[in-house]
Image (cartoon, rainbow, N blue to C red):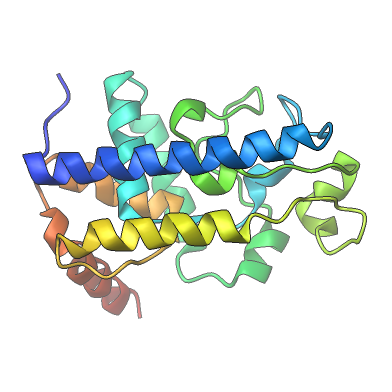
Amino acid sequence: MPRRLPLLADRSIQEAHAEKLRIAAEFERGVLSEGKVSCHAGCSNCCYYPLTISILEGINIYQWLAKNHLWTPKLKASFQEAKDKTWDLAPEIWLLSMIPCPLLDEQNRCSAYEVRPLLCRTVYSRGDPYYCHPHRLGSSLTGILSRILEVDELHLQEAKILKRHRLKPLQVSLAAAVLLGERIVKKEVDLEETNSTLLQEYVQRL
């Protein structure tokens, strides 16, 4: 049975998730009302883009994976490998390196689609998927729609939620956030210790 976080922490995770769903739904409605997009199941070009999320999203993804019995030793090892490869890696190098998201399965689908991050939920393109490939991302033919306002809105809401826990908002790789999320849910680290834990790990890697 999945472990439970303290009530305040659990409420914060659920509130952040609800905000993510609200913002993503509003964005999707606007995008689809203006015409068709070229995105389709199995097209995984965007799953190789640099992806950073908050600890709130990281915990939510870990909880979902654990609840659905998907958090296996093999998957955890994939997360650790992705974390090691992307830790403090410049976005430009990340793109060129073609490092897949650890949630990408063998069918080129997201294994945690239901709880995927806002950055993934709001990736839409009206152009040729060929130009969505990380190595062609700078092309004017990419057609990926801007979602800067939506991402900024979620970051603002997350900052308000994290303030209750005396935390400053930080964005880390999806792999790092989910792995730390596991430690928080297992009560190896308190949510309130997130920033200091990440700082300590950063210093150790220097």
